[in-house]
Image (cartoon, rainbow, N blue to C red; front, side, top):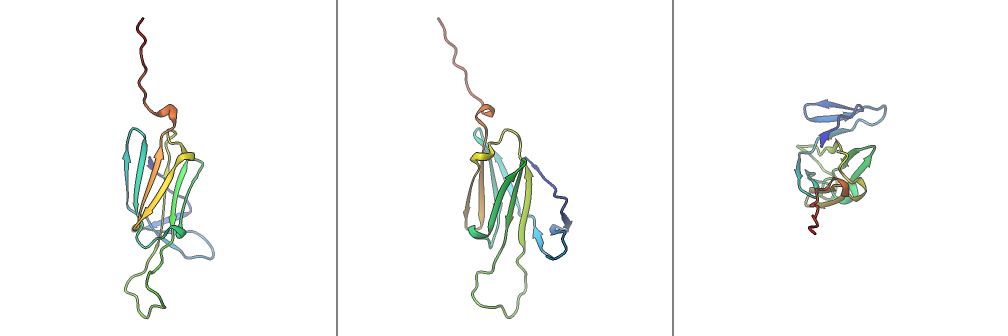
Amino acid sequence: MAEKTVSSLQEEKGVSQREGTRADERYIVPPVDIFETKEGLTVVADLPGVDGKALDIRVAEGILTIQAKTAHAAPGTPIAREYELLNFFRQFELPEEVDADKISADLKHGVLTLTLPKKEAAKPRKIEVKVG
């Protein structure tokens, strides 16, 4: 699974910025681990500060897009901040073997786990031999 570079984003030292006329949003590329099994691929992404309502995962034209908005968990208006929470954005080009209709996602404690199963035709199978 290859990472897909988006032409509408500019890279700046690990922080991406969307081109546009109104919004000046910056994005962080989340760290991701990808594992391959017989059944398919598993993608594990670290998204600290993200809850399920602020997470957008899409597949379109063979591109998997992970976009997430972060929010401070503390109530009230901050008086001083020493760091800024940035949103996350990353895209991958899916191999043809992945069944995009069966992709599932699970978010626990800021860790996103995506399960990308292979299509039935792409899975290895054993062929029984009849002896007679």
